Picture 1 (cartoon, rainbow, N blue to C red):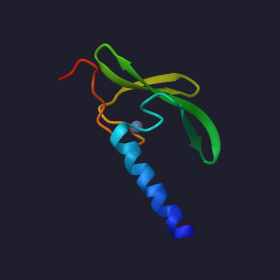
Picture 2: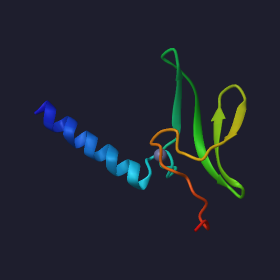
Picture 3: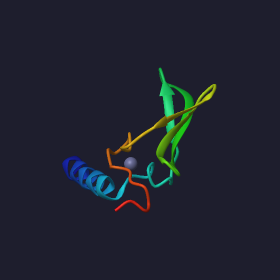
Picture 4: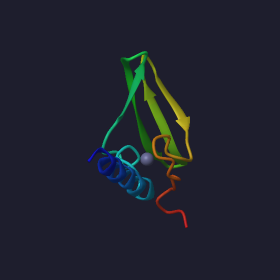
Length: 81
Ligand SMILES: [Zn+2]
């Protein structure tokens, strides 16, 4: 039974990779954990000049990203292509 569950999980992960995961579709914020403690959260945002990742801890940090750090999906601007 366990093996089947694992297979389903792997399948689900693949589906998420193709369509984007909960994080890059903004369904869920990313929980940041540091040494087992909750340290903050992060979320992706589609800015006018591309995608950015906001990291909220003691301060809010913004970094430009091209790929989802959670599932590896390439993030594209809505009007690209
Ligand atoms: Zn993702």
